Image 1 (spheres, rainbow, N blue to C red):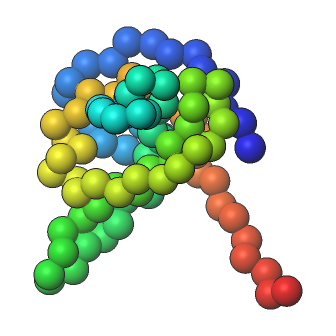
Image 2: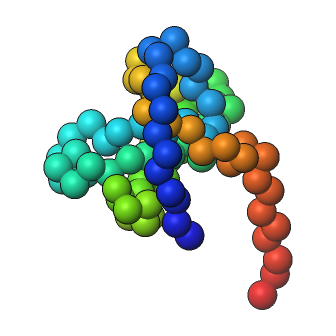
Length: 96
């Protein structure tokens, strides 16, 4: 799996949606210019709100980790890119 970066301009009012790409905000990932791609938004329940699940990729587009943040935190972030077609991707799980 690999991602190719072709970044364009975004505004703070862009909606949180699957496929959005955000910069890493701190630590080693910030220094190494990693990005995080929003893979899924969970529904939440009575004791936990909605969450955003991310795949972390290096500046070369190689997967290097995962993150999870509350939806209310991600709503304050500005996306730096978008992965087209990710929201339409369906994977099939088969028994071994």
